[in-house]
Length: 496
Image 1 (cartoon, rainbow, N blue to C red):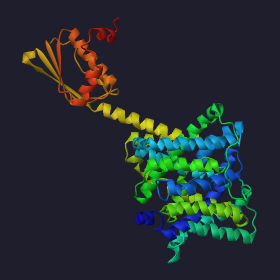
Image 2 (cartoon, rainbow, N blue to C red; image 1 turned 45 degrees about the horizontal axis):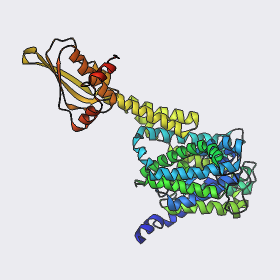
Image 3 (cartoon, one colour; image 1 turned 90 degrees about the vertical axis):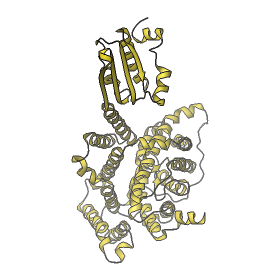
Image 4 (cartoon, rainbow, N blue to C red; image 1 turned 180 degrees about the horizontal axis):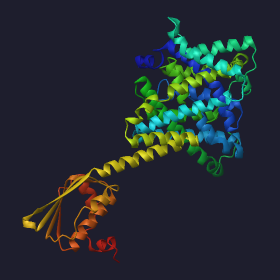
């Protein structure tokens, strides 16, 4: 027990502390920006990020992963806030939390095994592009000072680690933020800072129960939004957990993560915050800055709150150019550059799935739609590939009075037409044997096709015998096949 706690919390004190501080600094402008997107006060996003990060540190299933208010979730809240106000958003946040806990208990995270690697790669690349695109407003229509500061920030981020001794002991993004803030304060140059993003809160969050009537009308109002928030939140969290698994070469409990995200969102809603989920950008910052355990997530949340409430005057002086440099580093580090090189080596279907996921996600700014399209395409390509692996051979026997068909492969909706067209119904034979010992029937479509084959042969006067069905195929054929039922045969073949 003690060893487990030590490993999960205190095995990387220095790295987690410094990484948590870097993440907290990067969270502030993002939380404010996401609040503006959702149409609520900046403190709603800041309180949400604090609550979610602190709670998920204890309840989540993935150490070192950062969860807070996110842009993907904020985009789904716009209409609800505009039409019904903040109180209904808090109700939707609470309901989202409940639905995510339910998803954890019914093990919906198991569905992640249906997400192919090409979809994950497309998701990662799309997020990297979206993170970069989110920085463009800070680099458009600005003075040369912003470009100089951003370039200097990138130079520090990528150059500082090469310094002897000190380069490996302090995260370069933290050095970038501190140095550029000092330069900004000393020079007094006219560029945007965190303080220009919105007013920072000056009080700690307090318990806030939504002031709305608790009835069916309220439930039906918020349910569609809560369902969308649940799906997008869990999808982004599960995908981020998979990516962090790869970065750290450690496993995670994704069903526990579902429950943890739900508990965190309930906590956020009760403290006046909006719904959130895991953040791939901040998680990458955390990992690359040395964060590995739950402590880094906890420190990120606590430091975030302490800075915006008690050090607001200092935090407001952080130039946005410094944070833009950090986020550009994140987008560069997040993008799978190997996927570009692999385009010429991977199958065309894999490339199409990856590129479609990227294009749809970037085009719609909706992670759920992008991943859904990727999974759908991957499933279609897989079904087509498996459906083509079907061999049907035939041989004469008993001096030409019997024909033996040998079926090898998978028979299901994608291959059933090919299966049905492989038989010669006009050949004059007395007996037909269909050897299914090396075939497998998967669905109703396959069984119906088998019915049609048997019935057509019988109508031509041949005696049909099915041999070799394995147990699983025999079960579905015995249950759904109708070729031995005269009434059902007439109905299947178009009779009355």
